[in-house]
Length: 146
Image 1: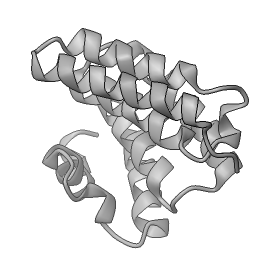
Image 2: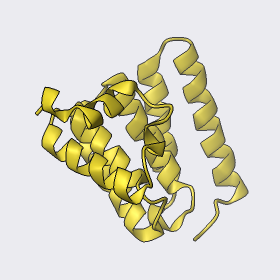
Image 3: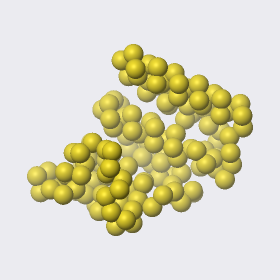
């Protein structure tokens, strides 16, 4: 896997700082745009860079947490899947993001499927820790949704 050059790393950090600043000031749209710009700044093929997975999750988390551009969530999930297949990231991480994405898109049967896989290969509920409790509640009580 490739590491970012100092120049690329500096630009990415600048985008993340700008994103945080906008978010703290309540401008969540600009905050999200900065995250997208950061990801787009990563050279192609993105899956060859160690940190690409993280930057893609920043965008996907923003979309899911803010319910902004939710119609683009599946595209970002596909991007994450591409990186995950190439990098073989943490067991269960991609599946957790897929579960969250499909939950927010109200495709509860797919969300349940991916959360089940996440728990199986991710060794329990660790990915649910620190997340919105609605995901674990859904996992434990899917009949309320499906």
